[in-house]
Structure formats: C-alpha cells, structure tokens
Image 1 (cartoon, rainbow, N blue to C red):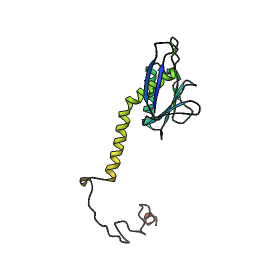
Image 2: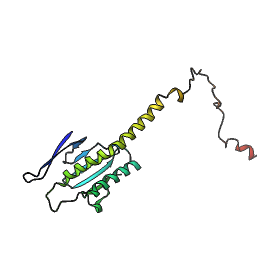
Image 3: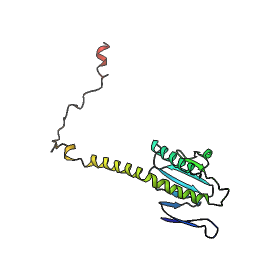
Length: 180
C-alpha cells in the first residue's frame, strides 16, 4: 500500500514522500508494518512509541533485527536512547519517540520514513536468508543425481535389516548376568 506523507505546515515548506510498505492501521490508529523478515514494527503516534515484535519465535536473529532497528532510529535522533527497553509482550522492544523543539515536525511521520529506510537497507539480508532456506528445502525434496542413489524397488519383508523385532537392544538388558 502506498502512503503519501507531507511534512511541514508553512506555505512553501512541504515535502511529499511516497512509501511502499506492507502496512495496516489498527483500530487504535497505530501503524503496523509487516515488511521485515524477522520482526513486525508498530508505530504508535498517539503514545509516541515504536514497538518491535518478533514474527514467529524469539531467537538471535530477532534480537539482532530489533537492536539494528532501534540503533538506526537512535542514531537519527528519533528515539530517546534511555527509553529503549523490553516491552510487555515476550520478546518485544519499545522506545519513545523524540519530540522536536525547534520545528513543529511530526515525529511519527519522520519515524515512518526512517523505518521504511531501515527496511530497505535490511531487505537484501532477509531475502537472501529466505532464498537459502528455500534452496535447502529444494535440495532435500528434489536432490540432484550426484546427491542421490537409485535404490529401486525395496522388497517388503517381515524381518528386515539388522535390528530384529523382539530382541532387547539396550546395553543394560544383560546387566542381570553379572549380578548372579
């Protein structure tokens, strides 16, 4: 969904930016961004807060992505460094947006632009990760001739292989012989 943002209130000082993001607006007015491969980002203009949630499961990749997001926003002066902390939801990070003193600039709009810039920087990373996972799955499901062997038809028998049914195969089963 394309979003057009206008920044500035005075005549002749408006700038228009168009962003292409997978974004939804919640019932409370928060913007939920789903473009990143490891995290979902919620931008709350009413609470002046940015929250990053893990997509599926919390792991080192998720923590790294959250850390890079808030470092990106902190270095641009959009998030108060002391406010970055763990959120109420398991594995979430949150940070408060900085307010402009000199110019009446909407911090949420600037944060949205910078989040889109962060996602554009990260896109090659998580797309290559998805490609590697897909390629690994394809190699397992459809192996090349060099990675597979021709077994042909394997005849079915009641007793097959070296492990016979009915025999106890654990190392402690013959332990009673040494206790007599």
